[in-house]
Length: 115
Length: 112
Image 1: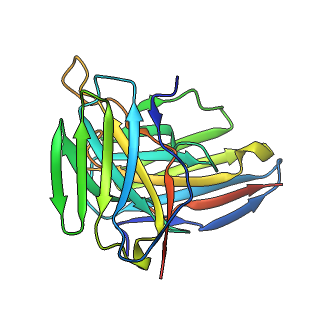
Image 2: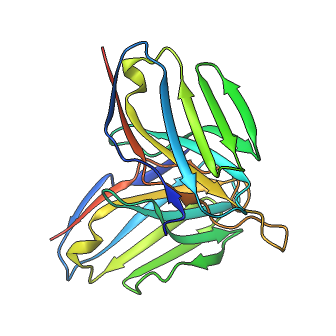
């Protein structure tokens, strides 16, 4: 069983729609959750960084974590063509020594916002 | 302009060549990473350096050899690669080991 599952898409929606991107995971020890956005021919850039369960909002973006269901989401309101990119989820644990283990990434979802 | 710079952006090499990828970070971070990104696969962590010491080597073949001469520079030396090594190689840095990562724009490697 893969540790992090993410639908690769493509997901195509009209401009202005609310977008929901999701990842599921199997390791209940994951505590830190991140979303990265990657434009074509560019490296990933950090969008959102959350700890444990709950919601975090930043402008048009909301990250949601449900640890009981092992499910994280990224919502994009009022989507724009410039939001067209690949969105990668990533997560990590705190190990017994108090440090973090390596990030585990999903495969990424390719999002297309149609003008 | 990203705080992590990678050169070259594109590289085509034969299986018998030797080449090196270069990464430089201008963010004052203490950890640097090499990742491999292939189509339809998650990012694969290859190497991690924290304070210039290698802390992780994820069973990467010996034809890949990293070098970290100081906290701002990271190299990946390549020799006798295989066509399946063709991928986007991403360098990243972070303030501490596994703080959020800042990525460069990658080197697109093609092995012929």
